[in-house]
Length: 159
Ligand SMILES: [Zn+2]
Image (cartoon, rainbow, N blue to C red; front, side, top):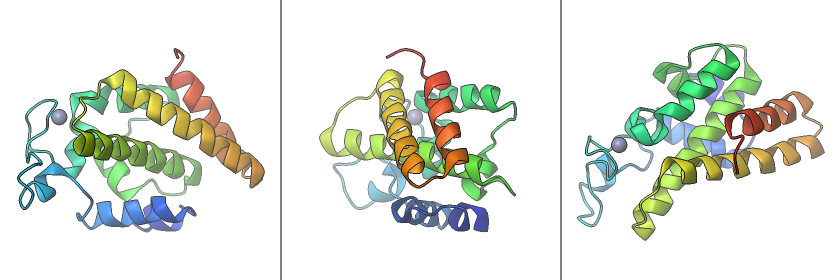
């Protein structure tokens, strides 16, 4: 469990991971219980809108993780998304960033009542990964810079 918080230096991503690990991150399933404007079920597929659903299980995003698993030649599981991967800081950072970007899309579509499609989610992830690769370049975190840059290009060849 500590990989998800210790490996990550950026505060807002750490905080996101912390909330996610403790099951207090924003999701329809929790928020919808006290805010009747927000559905407890997923607006895309109708299943309970839990954290894990938003980040991993929903058809809106499941292909993104499948593709990423192919690229890194290792199956990314739910538990790896939740708890992190032992001794792999670059991959932990990458997975956390993608989950964070997916959740950002959920916040936008929930607040603004916009229906997102997979292409829009991918566009948000891609621009976040490219931006972060530039930050990692400045920080001389070359391993992180490379994986963020490469995955953004391989995972999203079309603009
Ligand atoms: Zn769904």
